[in-house]
Image (cartoon, rainbow, N blue to C red; front, top):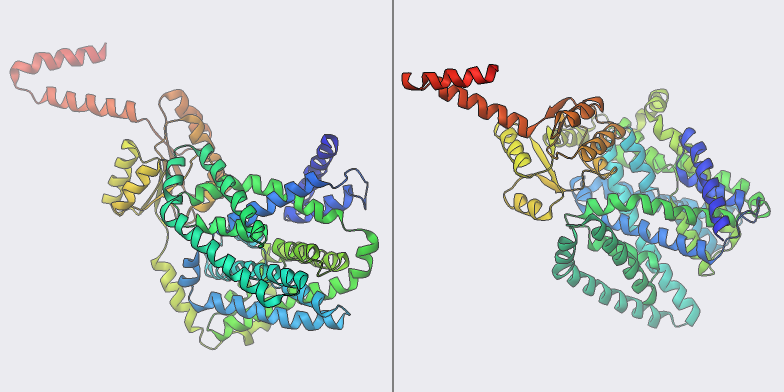
Length: 561
C-alpha cells in the first residue's frame, strides 16, 4: 500500500504542476489522477479503505472550514442582493435543469439530483480567483461571496433532507423518521449552542497560546462532531459543518482556518482521486453528450439569471456580468452531493459520472472566463445593455457605502510594548491602524479598548490573505525574530501586497538580510533607543551651567575617541 501511495502522490504532483501551468484549479488535476492511475487507467493504485478514510477526512475538514468561515454579516451588509441572487439562481437552475435532465432521458430522482448539483458554485475556487485578481473586496466580489454563502447554507440543508429521505426510504416509516431527525437535530443544535456559549470560547482561548495545540484541538473537534452527526443519522458533512459554525465567532477562527488549509487540500486530493478512479471509459462515453448540454446550460444560464436579477435590482450590467461569471461552474459540493446520492442508492454510477463530467468541463472553462473576465466583458458589453436599468440606482448607494468602509492605512504585526506604542502613535497621527497579535489575552484587552485588532500567526503563510491588504499603504512588523519577518515578507509578496514594509531587527546582520529580502524600512529598537538616549544626554550636558561644561567637553572628547 505504501508504494501505491507514493505513486499516487507522484502522479498528483506532476499533474498538479501541469494544472498550475494551465491556470486550472487542482480539482481538475486530482480527478484526472484518479482516472489515470486507477482501475480504469494504468491500474497503479487500487482504491481501498485507506484512500476512502482519507477522502472522508478531507470532506470533513472542508465542511469544517466552510462552516468556520460562514459570515452572515456579509449577507446582511449586502442587503437583499445576496439572498435574491443566491436563491433566484438556485431556483432557476434547479427547475430548468430538471426539465433538461428529463428531456435527456434521466429518471425523475436522477434528474432532481443532477439539477440540484448544477446549482452550487465553488466557494473555494471563486474566492481564490477573486483574491488572486485582488477583486475580493470589489462590489461584484462582495456580492459573489454573499450569494456563495447562501449556496453553502442551502447545500447543508439539502444534505440533511437527503439523509432524512434515505432513512425514511429504508424503513418505510416516513413521518416517524422525519420527526426523529428533527428531534435529533434540535437536540444537537441545543448542545452545540450551549458549548458555543459556555465551553468552546474558554477552551480555545487557553489553547490559543500554542498554535500546534490550537490546530490539533480544532481537528479533533471537527472529526468528533462529524462522527456524532453520522451516529445520530445525519451525514458526516453536516456534523463537520456544524463544528465549523460553532467556532465561527471565536477570535481564533482565522488562525485555525489558515492553518488547516494545507491539510484540507491535501486530504481532499484523495476524495477527488477516489471519485476519478470510479470513472471508466464505458461509463463516460454515453455521458458525453448530456454532459455537454448541461455544461452549456451552467456556463450560460447561471450567469444570465444572475445578471437578470441584479439588473432588475438596479445594478450596472458590468457588475452583474462579473458577479454572474462566478456561478458559471459547479462545485466540489456538487460532486459530494452526487457521492452521497450514490451511497444512499438514489443514483447510479452513470449519473455520478455525468455530474463529474459537468464539473470538469465547467470548472475548466469558467476558470479562464473569471481570470479574463474584464476582457470578455469588453467584447460583450455592447450586447448587454438590456440587463441594466436606465438608472442603476442601487449601485451608486453601495459604492458610497463601500468608500466609507475602506480598509486600514497601516497593518502592525506584534502588539507587545514596542508594537503597541507604534500602533498608538500612528493612530494619534491620523492613521487607520489594524493590529495583529498571536497572544489572545492581548487581542482581548485591546478589543475592550476599542482598538482594531485581530488574532493571527505572523509566520502562517496563508494568514496574510485574510487581511485587507489592498487598501494598506504600510505593513509594519514589531516582531524582532528574523525568521518571522522573512516569512512575513514572502507571504506579502505572494499575496500581491504592493505597499511598503517595515520590519524589526535586533542587529545589523539581521537588518541586512531583511533589506535584501525587500523590507523598505528596518526598525532597530535597541540601537534606535540607545541613540535617542545618547542624544538626550548630550543635549542635557550641553545645557548644563558652566560648572558642568568641562564634563560635557570630556564626554564629547570620549565620543570622538
